[in-house]
Amino acid sequence: MATAEVVNKLKELHKDHNPSNDFLPLLGTDHVEFYVGNAKQAAYFYQIAFGYKLVAYAGPETGVRDRASYVLQQEKIRLVLTTSFDPNSYISEHVRVHGDGVKVLALWVDDAEKSFQETVKRGAEPEFETKTLTDEFGEVKMSAIKTYGETIHTFVERKNYNGAFLPGFVAVQNPSVKSTPVGLKYIDHCVGNVGWGEMNKWVNFYEEVLGFKLLITFDDHDISTEYTSLMSKVVSNGSGFVKFPINEPAEGKKKSQIEEYIDYYHGAGVQHLALATDDIIHTVTELRNRGVEFLVVPDTYYDSLFERVGHIDEDIQAIKNLNILVDRDEEGYLLQIFTKPVEDRPTVFYEIIQRKGATSFGKGNFKALFEAIELEQGKRGNL
Image (cartoon, rainbow, N blue to C red; front, side):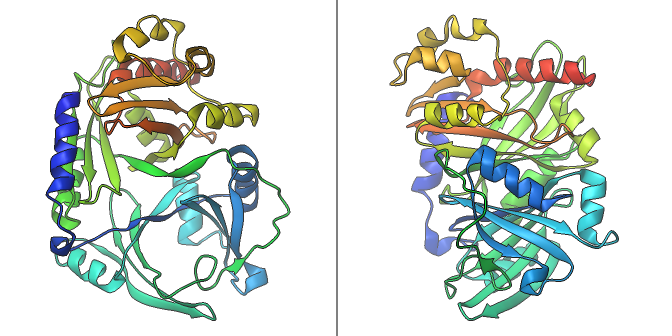
């Protein structure tokens, strides 16, 4: 789909959206929960490297005997890192199979019971029925459905709660790790990788079960290099607050990044979170200074870049020095950059994105990005 078509589709989607007719109104992303091998160490990494603040905790000290969970927050982004103490638990099994990875994409709703009932009657497989958690700060209602791989969507209703996170968690007033934010604001979109021939199945799931709309389609002509390619479709809820690109592999001369992910994750799962910033130069400079590694695009990427995208407000030399990508659509432009995988398995990574009016996804950067990914795959012997 051409960039102009993407912009027009977004306008149409949001113009026609009537909240009163939306059977699953979403207020945004509530949190993302990772199952990890060592939550304490992972929390330290995200505090020091990404500037998250530890805001809540649950574990033996709070009466939770079988696990420890650390809640990290920066502006509207909330990550939960959970480790099990039981080697035979489903959490430990998830980590054994997948490594550290996303288990829960939690969606913030006004009515967890209605969200559950509406999606289940449309074909969703339940993960758990609505339950109410209470403490001195009020109550939270939660329900959950299954989606691709072992990923679940939890519906979180917290309108009657004013605690730090959820009942069972205690607020952390003075964390021992003194973190400094890097300017991350909210989750722009979340990308899932699925197996061969499964993309349309899951796009249909989001359309039919959650009431999302198909926003963009990228085929192997849009996203390919000499060696690898993939296909992707982006679905969005009516308000546009929640966007999920779904990727699947496509035939190529060599193994694509999606195949590599599925091989190492051992199935479908969340590939990356795109985190929004209002000042990508500041954010990326801070992240690099703290040891976060990014993909490197060749210098030739910048030879004709500014002829293609036109004027931008940011310092051109800083953009080049930091290896930031730029693309433009009819509404403006965007700046983006992608980290290397943040763990030993080549699975989960992050995108840092700043939108200066643009509503698209950086199609003009796909070739350079995929060539950079292939360089890393080659180093790992996985291309």
